[in-house]
Every structure is written in structure tokens, then in C-alpha cells.
Length: 303
Length: 248
Image (tube, rainbow over all chains, first blue to last red; front, side, top):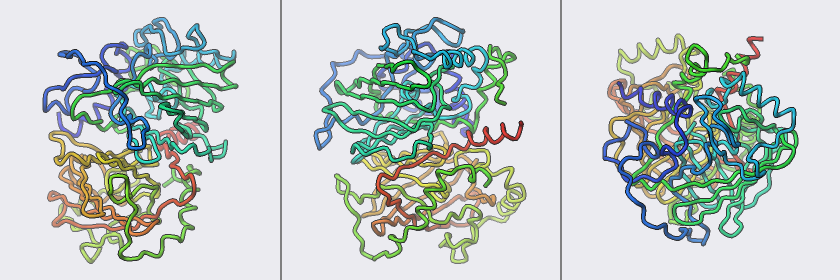
């Protein structure tokens, strides 16, 4: 295998992996140091799980010079009930979509409170359009989907900002923390929206508007409209756990707001770095969904 | 480039930057503001006012050699001409691939620099790329290559020096087919020359393709609007939408 193929294959595998990796199989877990020289081979930072040493008790939340929580480092989404497969409570619907509790804590039934119109759209996506999953086409995941995507992310806290850089789809979020207003016109729609933040004690509160309707909530075809508004509460509780909550409202798609909650756990692997995620540069993934590739979806009607 | 016309939002940013005159004056001896750890503060949203992406070779952006020509080896020059013959079809950017370095810094799309003591992160509006510059690592990674290379940084006074290695051979320098091999090595220098100007230099070497290192220099302008932010240039999405329209 030539070196130049590695990043292509990594990207292709990365998306494909979503289809079969069971939640709890390792990603989102802290890992001890791997063997040196493992870079560029098997994916690190979440897969495997052999040789895991017991962890010492967590320490207190780290602090920046100004006293704000210091969340810098590498993190993985955890304890989200297989949200990347389906964000709501779900039975096993396909071999590629295992059963899970989902990440919805409100309403208590764990289900998205769709309007009839959007319930029908989501059902149609699942039955007929799984090959249209935006990530298969190398689009960014939007919110809150990006927050439970696999392979982890890095938080940086340069002055005035919290920056999140994901390996998956090389997506990033730039969150100013000065409580600035949203300044984009409502007609400007973005995959990742316009996020503005401020601190309430140890909680970073992030308000996101200007989201487009081209992202899904998960791999099962759950959706939102371009009226979605997301308020996130991001609270580190010790030096290796961040509690994450997001309240999602969208009067076109849902009958009432709903809420997801899960954790980010610190990836404490020494010398860990995010690798390059080449997606469109080597995307072979859409075909994996079609019948002649063993998938169940019909060919995309959008093509 | 046909896709460019589809992006209204990016155009607005470009238009606003184009009218900025605040950065024209550039005093020698300008001292950049400081980050909390005492380094020159390069943070902000930056963009080249006029991109050399149409054809870098022979442009004034090449400051060494003095004739502004890329010093190709003879057989490499033949390859560049072959690239140029089919440039629209073969330009990696027309397939929405990552542009590589320095091309991504020379496009008419802004990027934002962030600094912490251990990392410099550069977020790009162009296909939501970001680069992480590792300030506490002094060697490139073994046995791997990247579209955007591997970036390790250090400070030379108030200049951020970024050594970029581990490239693949899949990217071009411009639309005209100027290219490199996987032996490409780029040393970038970022120097703040005024409140709203950033000097960008890149020294490019590749012993398989060039007879000598060559150097580009450009002055980048800062987006000075209050609450300015990067928007999104989602190349693949726009290409898919355009193809759908064409198909119907």
C-alpha cells in the first residue's frame, strides 16, 4: 500500500465504519498509550480497547488564567445511546443500524416530537433515501449531529473563543464567547450555523441559528427544517468529563422543543493527534448502501 | 471558476475586504499586539486581496527567483505543460479536493488564525478545512502523507514559521497546472506588518521537480468588520446541486 493511499482509505473507512460499529465498542473511551509507531495504521483514539489500564480517579476541572474552565484537549462523544445511528430511542431497524436508547432525555419517551409532515419525511428517508445521508456525500453534519460524530475532536481556547476541530469531515466550530449577537441575515443558511456563546459559571452556553435544512440528525434519516434553533450547555465536571446538553426547537418540524444529553470523555492518550480526514478525495461510500452492494436503500432519487 | 459564482456569501466578504483601505500604510517597525503568553498576536480573519490562483508562474507573487518563474527541471516543465492542457478537467480544486499549501492561503476565501501556547489553528472558509500547527513538536510524522501536509511551527522573533512536510503528490499550486511531487517541502513565514496586514511568505522546495527552492510573498488583509466571521464554501454540495439542476 502506498503512503498516499492511506488518507484516502482512512476517509472511506471512516464513513463506512459508522455502519457496523456498535456503540460502546470502544470509541468514546479513554485509552492508554498505544505502541509507538502505530501512526497511519489502524485508527487510534477510540478503537480497539485491548490492554486498557484502570484509570485513576478524575481530578478537578482545569482552569484558564481568567478562571474559566479549561476544556482544551482531545475528546470523544460517549454515553449517547448510539445517537450517530439514530438520535432517538430505536429498535434495530437494519443490520447497519443497531438498536439503542438514543440521546434524547426530553420528552421522556426518547422520541423526536415530529409534526406529521416531518414524521412522514423522516419515514420516507429511512425507507427510500438512506443513500442520501449527507455525510455519504461529504457534507458537514450540522447540529447536534456533529457533536456525537465518531473519531473525536480537539477543543482549543484561544482568547475570546472556544474552537472545536473534528477529525470527522475536518469539520470545525468557531464559538465566540463574548456573548455577541447573531449578525447574519436570517436568509443566510449554513451547514454548521452561526454559533455565539457565553459563560454561565462553568457552563458554556452556545446559541446557534442560521442552520440550513440539508443536514440529518443521524444515519437513519431523521431531520429538521431550516428553522432549527439549538441551545447547547457544555459543562466540564472534572478533568476528563464534559456534560453536554442541547435543546432543539424547530416549529416547522417539531411540535415542541426536545433535548439531548450525553458526555464527552477526554482522550488522554499521550501524543494523540487528529489525522487528516480525506472524504470526497476518496469517497467510495455511497455505493455501500445500494442493493448490489448489499445495502437496502434504493438508488438516490436526487441523483 | 464556475462554482465561485454560486457563492453569494463568500462574495460579500470579498467585496467588503476589497474596499478596505485601512491597511495600505505599513510602517516598518510595527510591533504586533501580544497573546497572553507574550507571542505576536496574529489572530484574526485574513484574506489575500487578489488571488494569483489563475497562474502563479511568472506572477509578481514569486519574489525569488527574480524573473518570477518557477524553476522547473526540464522534464517537470513538460509535465506542467501537459497539466495546463487539461487544466479544467484535472485541477484538483475542480473536484473539490483539498488545495494543499500554499495554495489554500492564496485563494480568494478568508481564513482565521487562532493561537494557544501549544497550537496554532488555521480555519478556512474554503471547504471547511482547518490546519493544526503543532508548536511543541519538532519533527514531521514518519510514514504518512497528507493533502494539506504536516505543519510544525516555531517563532522567529515575531514571525510564525511553519514547516510543512509529509505532502502527497496530488495537489497543484494553481489552476494552470503548476505542480509538485511528494517531496514537496514548504516553509511558511507569517509576520504581522500592521494592524490590518499580514505578510505571508512561503519557500517551496522539491528536488524531484524544481532545480532550486523558490519563494512567494503576499500581503494579506484583515477583515475589520465588527463580529466578522467565516462563512462556508461547500464545494461538493454546490457541485452536487449544480449537477442535479443540469440533470433535470
